[in-house]
Amino acid sequence: MTKTFAHHFPFPVITITNAAEVARFVKFRIRYAEATGYIHNAYFSIVQHFASSSICMELFETFSKRPYKHQIIVKEKVPVLAIALRGNIYVNSPQRQATQQLKAGQCILGFVSAGSYSIQIPRSHTRLLLIACQTEWFKERTRHFPEIQLMQSRPGMRGIRLAGVGSCPLSFSMLRTIIHLLSLHPNAGREKLSSETGQLITSLLEEYNKLCLNKKEHIYARLNKISDYIGKILNEKKPVPSIADIASRFGFSERSLQYHVKQATGLTPSEFISDLKMREALRLLKETGMQVQEAAHLLGYQTVAGFRKEFKKKYRQTPSQYQRKRYSNEQD
View 1 (cartoon, rainbow, N blue to C red):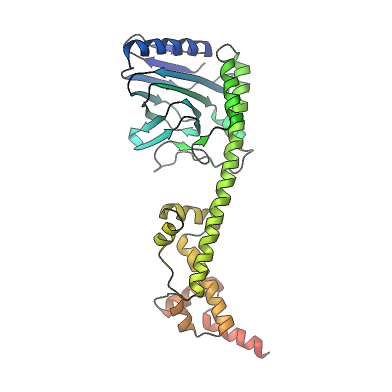
View 2 (view 1 turned 135 degrees about the vertical axis):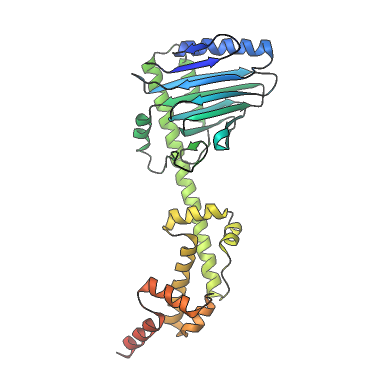
């Protein structure tokens, strides 16, 4: 079976099954848009069917004198590459209460879940290139790029789930590849088109991988600054700020800080701060001979019992046991 796009207009339904028909429909749609000024309630019912081809590509180009919306119904979850070649486009998922903006010269890549979506086009001339892939075909290629995490829809998660870092600016080499791809469209055979499109997606995955690496390095640098900041506060015997204050100081939201600390250390921010406190506690008890009660107070613990409990959880001995053991070793 082939992939079918059923377009519902105020006139008979048009079914598109191959690239040549897509090109003819685009021209027809442009003429209709120019004649009427806008397309009102254009509904698309999308059903994905793949046989010999792993990739299907559609090019949408519209002219309009005023903003309008397209309604899209996705029948099954599918990996999609969307490229805004001209104009800014907004994809909204009413049932998931989420909106994704796609600016001109940007693209998004990832899984689009089954459901109803509306595409809002605010300006007169837009070009949108949509490429859908077989899920297994797409997953096979992403295995070569370990930095890319495919965020598939899970229970309780809303909106369009994207790969890696979300929207990605198009590099010159990628634009050149797209121009070449469009020059083949619609006269190229299915195998040639699939091969060229596959190369484009591979190039995009490489770009995503680089962005993910750069982003990870940037995040780690900021987390190191947070660690140094907390360590400095502890050395100066000042109270540690709240997680919300730390997040705001270093340009994170509280939720984002929790996510990145967990990804980098396997700990929550509270556990991460507690770990830094325990390291400082060990230093104070070892290097200064400070009393347990005083160390607990300096590190911001409300009770000595709470300090003892956390110390024992970390080092499998109480602070007093640690001091006695250390003193005994020095005597020997």
